[in-house]
Length: 233
Image (cartoon, rainbow, N blue to C red; front, side):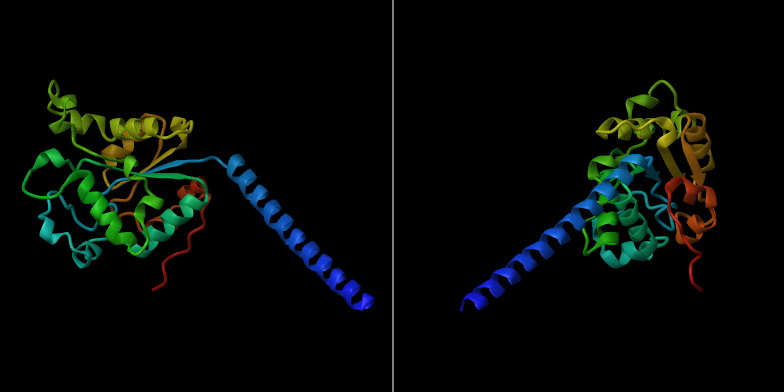
């Protein structure tokens, strides 16, 4: 009987030791992961919407046309976009959207941030897009409909996405220097303005933001700390 009790105690000690060891291993891995995130440069990745995420310019859309099938047919590379944003979050980067789509442009349909949120939800379904792009980091407005443009009709052309990016940075509880901002846009002018402001900026006019685009840009891959192979044919 004593031998049986001793064996049971020994087995219990062994199980506890194994569990403690497993917990220590998990904690060590988590500490290493957090250390890597702390040491890695955290970036703010700002994506344009029209013709960067989408195939065609969207503009104002009647609410009845905002169906999941309709939205998904207008996405450049849905699978890649989801994979990219999930990986970016795992790497500690912030992701945002900057667009000239503006809810003030029309009262006849959906536009601006509401439109973009509808698109993102359809893209990520069944996941929740807000886990990867905070709704707070969607800057969707056009200076043409704001006070920024009252004294200068050409303001939207001149300023690019500078004010959008500035607003996004103010909303992030983390120090984001200009060199840690990455803009991906199909408009070459917006890219040049961002570069003039000290940001990293890449033009995706030919392909939009797709696996093909990222796989062909080694400099962007190095900047993001991501490796992306060419799309399979």
